Image (cartoon, rainbow, N blue to C red; front, side, top):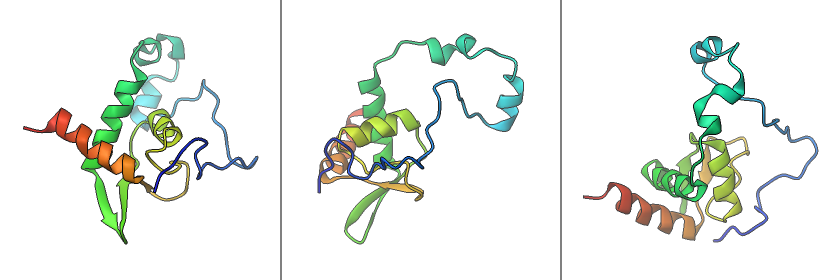
Length: 123
């Protein structure tokens, strides 16, 4: 199984909600603390970083939470949504915007996730 661009599970349906770049979802205690803070002043939003490295780290963490179900490798999708979207676009996972709590890893995605996990976390 392989997922290639465009993501085969991504909905192009107009009913799919699209978030604007200025929307930031935060846990309630943090959200109430930052309610008057302009988004430009939040450090992580201004920080330059290598998105491919983040994608590799998220893919490695997907291996940590992965499980096999009916011959398919799945992982819990509680990671950065932008990174999950990029991994979907790269063909490693199914569309994270689906209703389920997990994503399906392609064969290449499961293999690369295991390799990256061993690289970053192996002893």
